[in-house]
Image (cartoon, rainbow, N blue to C red):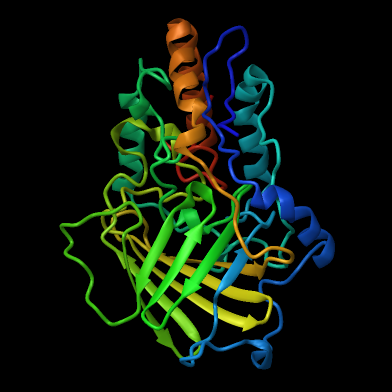
Amino acid sequence: MGHRGLGFPGTLVSVVGAMCVYGATATRHFVAEVMAAGPAQATTSASDSSSVPNTPWGHPDLQGLWNNSTTTPLERLTAEEQARSRAAQRAVREATDGTGAAFPDAGRPLEQPSLVIDPPDGRIPMMKPEAIQRLVAREEARQGRGEADSYLDRNSWERCISRTLPVAMIPNLYNNYYQIHQTRDYVVIQMEMIHEARIIPLDGRPHASERIRQWLGDSRGRWEGRTLVVETINFNDKLDGGDLQPSHVIQTGHRGSGKTMRLVERFTRINADTIDYRVTVEDPATFTRPYTVAIPMRKALDTDRMYEYACHEGNHAMVNILKAGRANEQAAMEGALLVSRQRIEAGHPGVREPAVPFVAAPRR
């Protein structure tokens, strides 16, 4: 299957962006998993170390196929913020006749109110003024530019380059499976979406030079007792989209450039069916303090493999979005102005649909 786009009424113009619906694993197995597990679960199941297998060399065995689907939001919203977000989105939803994926892998709510567990209020910390200004400046720089003037206006996900981190480890609407492979000296995490593979050395080697910047950063792992700890640095400086893509940083994506970001992940297999996954995000150029996200990863019930996510091979959306933008340039400009106004009125210039506004909306 290919990308699924959203069109502006009366034209072929895409104004919001395309959703990827590749990968059959989530679609095929999500219903069985939800029915078997019940309507809700805790952050992690009760620990039962006796049911956790070890590798032949003595480390906890993390191998297998895991799913982290959940309907619990990344950040905790107030009723006022929910109403404000709905109001800001109304014009775009009416213009595009709604949004949505065909086969959502929604999962179940957790007992925790948000995936963010630290700070205790369940919200990503305040952005620094200079980080907000970066997003505001990009919003202003796009005035007079359509959402599809060039492939450079679309994000790295739509272009089949990378979902980046930490978004690649945070559940989305679909394709939330992870295949973990393990040896004495390496752990490999193969992600269903865009079929990216994270190859993580465990042999104590130092990080690569900071001059080598990567979409998924440079990861090094180590064992602290029964927990695999992975530190990742040396990200490139375009995780938030670069100069031309303020509308395509999704709520689970990093809101800064990524240049100064450091991730510390912890994988603890607490029983036969659950990995307690936690990631702490540090970026002194973007946020006033670090924050931590906790997401349980559940063992797949009836399969031990992921199905192919053929991104470039089926990426019809990129061609269609650019064609649509050329079909009616005026409508493309009107659509871009509409979604820009949505972002500004919702209090998040430069970011698409975040849970919590990070800048005061202008008075109307």
